[in-house]
Amino acid sequence: MKKKKPDLSTIIFAIVIILMIVPQTRMPIQEGLSKIRMVLFSPSKMDEEEQIQLEPFTYRLSHLDGSAANVEIGNGNVTFLSYWATWCPPCRAELPSIQELYNDYGDKMDFVLITHEDPEVIQTFLDKKQYNLPVVLPQMETPASLFERTIPTNYIIDKKGKVVIKEQGATDWYSDKVRKTLDVLVEE
Image (cartoon, rainbow, N blue to C red):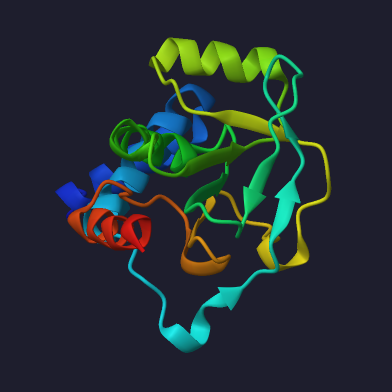
């Protein structure tokens, strides 16, 4: 009986499995897969009946240096709110698009990127990647209406506190669709 040679797809599958087992290659592969997802999916405005109306509140936060960074949610500013972590491959994959969005809209709306990590770890990561994003640490419990166990979880909240976009997983935040939505929200 003749031995059958493995076909190319079997070899590729075996290589991917091996690479996913090796810790040093796992994160780059997961980031790459997240970037592929980002190309395929961009956030869109939620249907009106799915949008959550938040009561206006002050999110008690602190900058990485420990100084207060409180943000008013639903009190007149559009807010981009993100829950993320430096160790999360989908979070890392979407940060370049968030940085681009921040570069264009940072002076027109609030950007709040919340993480629970050590400030030194965060600052080292931001410096290495050359990001100037407003990363903050929470000083209160996450409001129940915004609590999710998944990161990244991102929200765009209008000036009156209505969640108009909610996305989990890596997303292209610099898409035309998102920018058109923000242009309308900022002008309202």
